[in-house]
Image (tube, rainbow over the protein chains, first blue to last red):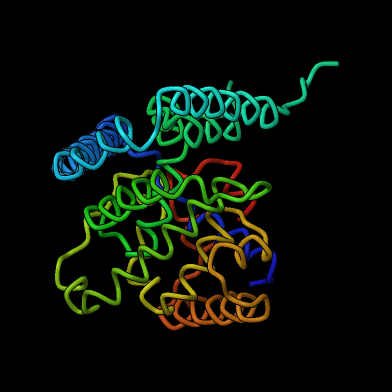
Length: 106
Length: 194
């Protein structure tokens, strides 16, 4: 059998079967798994988020005395206001400098 | 029709499940067909591997490089899933279950040739290269991308696989052209090509 003829015969012989009839079922099976995975991820995030928040709250309670000392005694009210203003200014500057996206349409 | 590129951007950008569903609908036949050839007719295993392939694609969609064809990328994931499967399970176990045959008219046309038995004559790598070349219609460089094999290896797998198939057909006195002529259901176009 000539090589070219054998190649075309091979092409026909190895061609995939007709498209599977259960395509819809297969697709819904895949999407079901995708959604299940999403739910599992959300639960994992929620559980670890709650654990993190609990530890954070516990830490805040333990440090509450020293935090209140910083604001009540170590720093006078004017310094706190200056700090707040400086922080707001720094955030505004950061936002301005990072917002460098150029419009696609000229 | 929305392009694959746009759908991929939606999936990576906002985890758009509807976009991913469209991609699955579009490419499931090719990936399932490819895996069915690789596992040599075991449709259940092939579909399980295809499902794993799409799930992995969903998870790793952000790693798809620009310029890479989505279908080639899906084929490469499917091929790796298949290799992992063959490593996990002994080949004998796969062979123990009689493979389910599809109700393909083409299969009926080739009634004299037992395709799974024929494809048993070649190694897994040869089967993958032959399937990608002849069933998926991929070029040799595309097969290199999918399988990760060097170009020379791909070419030699295809050449060697073809030789083995030819030899088996000769030994079993199967002539493709003879089979086609004897088939009454053969469409005229295919008969003339054969």
